[in-house]
Image 1 (cartoon, one colour):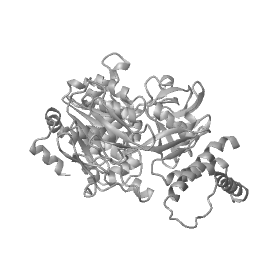
Image 2 (image 1 turned 120 degrees about the horizontal axis):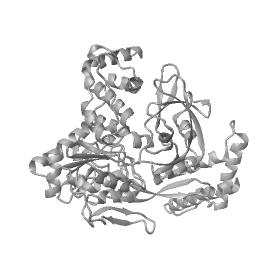
Image 3 (image 1 turned 135 degrees about the vertical axis):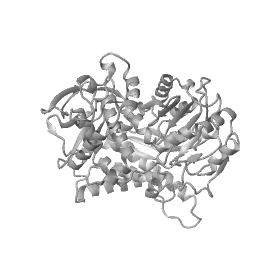
Image 4 (image 1 turned 180 degrees about the vertical axis):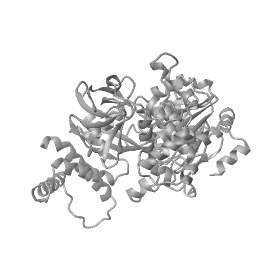
Length: 557
């Protein structure tokens, strides 16, 4: 136990000594208090831990006390320096390396009447252990290793499904249309974490690519998706970085390199430690030359802001959506002695125009994470210019060229989503409970018989599938059975949303998450605005600037 915490305790001592030295340099001359030696700090620290463990009303482990002490120490530095206990550090490494060991399924909690929480299996990854053993979209896990999971949290379920490669886990699922629960014994294997999950033509000739985060495989995934789309033959491309929290700096550089000219500056970093200041330029000549619109929102941070900032500064893309989070600090990750990790801020990064996009963090942590800067508050922010002379702002995230708020769900829409109405109704249709006279048929995966690939089949089936009046009447009866109160006006006012959500869940069940997402973007106001902006994006790409009429789009924010 002593060896396990030696490095962590020394880290606290050394950092405390460093802070003491910095503060001491500002003290005026005169009688000074006696300086504590490192041994004094160590003695007080270990004495405090010993006293807590002996006398506190609760039995608190030494690891919990030391981990909390380190986290408290880091909080006085900046919001993004952080400490990871062994479990947290393992998950961080899995995300960075784009892989984990498990079954290859996505799970989420589902409220079912008075039974509380259960876990629902969404479509298994291609060629994953779950797919090979026959798990399906809509399966509900009721037991793991023979133990009911009705009261488990989602994190607890995930912890039990993951494990070392080659080990097995027994799960019991409930499946629509089958009375008896089905038991599976599944061997865990390496599962890639997909960071570029969606890529398709959102309309003929215009591609859409979604990047969830930046890990070791992101640039390779993007290259593969762009090749499949035939990117250079498209008339436009939407790059969706919304809700992307960031990730690896080198991957942000590699992703930006797809779109900017060779040797263009992508990002620069400046730090106090030797070797922490760099300028990163685009090394490649093989470029994607299509008009580009990038979507961001208030949850786009760090690496996603590097990409958006570089493309904006070089007038290579129009940025649409909402002002991004504003994280301009670079963390270096250090592995500690006891399988823990330390992410320490070692540099600041700057966009090509010289913008530091980091928001002010002098207030409370709550305000920093929950009260982002108002988009219109630009008076105190630094002002820079793009390659063509357009004004851009620093110090508070990336401000979009065209601000487009995401449409909020109304009360009735949010209620239906919260009660998992659409998911449950799609499961009902999948089990064969189709209303008479509706002429409804589930989409057929032609690749499972003989015919076109599933991707092409899904694209055409989305256009063909009709949510009929008879099906809507059945849907209304279904939500009545779920004790959801509504009026005819509720249905009429939200008819497009209801049809789209039913269709989305059907296509998730039949073809997977991408095809369900393809349906969802049809109602996405920010994606639809990006489509409208493609002519301006083309002008920007071909001339390096906007026309006076198009410049007015920037002002109306």
